[in-house]
Image 1 (cartoon, rainbow, N blue to C red):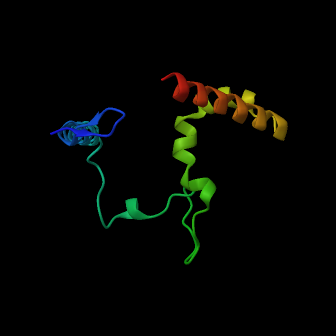
Image 2 (cartoon, rainbow, N blue to C red; image 1 turned 90 degrees about the vertical axis):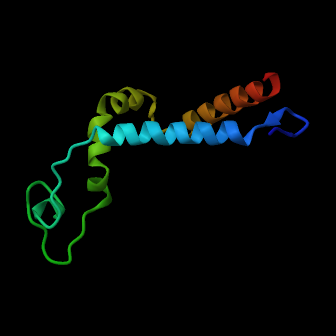
Length: 108
């Protein structure tokens, strides 16, 4: 089945097969994970530098993403060179990316 749009075609069967492929890859990656989690043990407790949290205390946002930041530290350190704190730099990068995006859309 092909659905014409004037700018090409859209095949729902191809997209469904691609979606199933992405799900299969995600499931395969998930299967590679550890099986050491035990429900009902202290593994369910929030970990904050090895300390038990007082009753009713929460974990701050800086701690929620610690694992991602630690895993991506080499990339984040390289990207830190582009982080000047000057608004004009960010506007410049935005304009450069906008021009590149427009060129891709117009020439593609």
